[in-house]
Image (cartoon, rainbow, N blue to C red; front, side):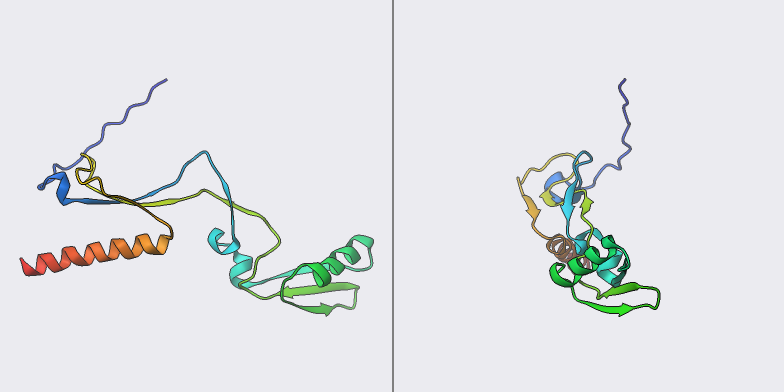
Length: 147
C-alpha cells in the first residue's frame, strides 16, 4: 500500500541560495540510552525518595547497596515501622536507564528546492544549533532594518 501526500508550498520570492534550513531530525526506528538530564527525568530535576524495608532480607540488601555502592548523595531517615527512607538530592543520576530517540540538529543551505551552496552542518549540541538559528534570525532583522 502506498500513501502519497501533496505538499502545499508558497512559491518563494528568492532563489534557493538565499535561504537556510534549520532542521531537527529524529530516526523513528532507533532508541539510545540517555542520561537523566537529557531524558527530562523528574528524579534528576527534583530528587526522589526510595523506601527500604529493612525487616526483610531484600530491604536489607537494598539499603546496604544504597549506602555502600550507589555513589549517590542522600539523607537517611528511619521510621518507627522498620522502613528506611533514602532521600536523594536533585541533579544526580537516578537508578533507571532512560531511552530516548537520538536527535540530529542540522543547518544547511537552501530550502526544499535544494542546497546550491553545499552548506551542511550537524551541530554537536542542541545549544549550538539554537545559537546558530538565533544569530541567523538576528542577521535577517538587521538586514530588514537597513532596507
